[in-house]
View (cartoon, rainbow, N blue to C red):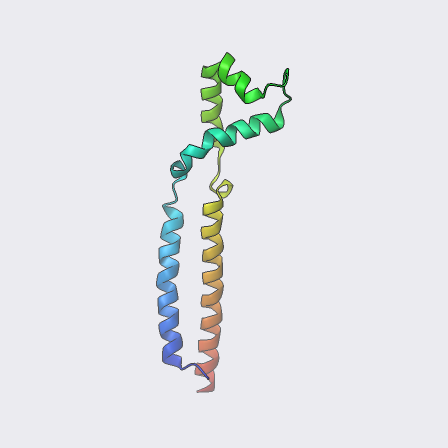
Length: 117
């Protein structure tokens, strides 16, 4: 069944509004919401990139021997995180990309129908 020009225009309008909402969600993305995972992620990074000493993980050593240094390095680590380091952010950008592709397809279909009318 062929879609009518009006139904495609309505679908385009709805999708444009959805895209605006998704863009706003991306702009307002706040990595601090994931703060509870930062220490674990930092510890994993330390332990994966540095050798164990006497079978003790580097993250544990740093926490115990120099907690101030650990805290400073954790802060540096968090500051270095980019939005692309967050799976949730990447999911939003993937959704936006899909929405924009769908919008393009609808606009092409609309143009085709209007040319054939």
